[in-house]
Image 1: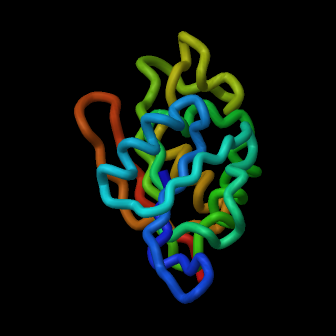
Image 2 (image 1 turned 135 degrees about the vertical axis):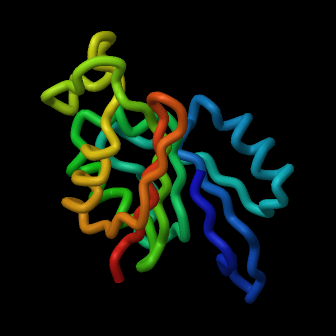
Amino acid sequence: MAHQHGHDHGGGHHHDHAISASADRGPLTVALALIAGFMVVEVVAGAADRTNFPDGACDALFMRNVYHHFAAPGPMGAALAAALKPGGRLAIVDFRPRGTEASMPEDRDEDATHGVSADSVRRELMDAGFQVERTETRGERAFMVLAVRGT
């Protein structure tokens, strides 16, 4: 879910705005966003290499257990950066594989190599122009990478 604060929908009215790239979880996203107090909720179907969010539409993006499915992290990193306003934050929660990490991103969702390392996520985000602020680990496999889009 992405959060855009203070979006003007015309007439000078400002509303909180939630955007989800998960069309298959659209109803759940809408319900959760309304409970959280968002006034405007929009579900946008993303693609494997792009978010389909408007450029500069988001203050922050959050994804959980999704990043390892990106077969082309370069184009997706560029799309994530484009969707964020300058200085916007990106939080990625994912998990490392139980064994060796796949040598190719498109193989990260295979059984034997299912997952991605925090090091790969950090490197790929920096390649996309993000500044990585911190990485946290949780348990044996889970991690979070917090990054900021440059200005």
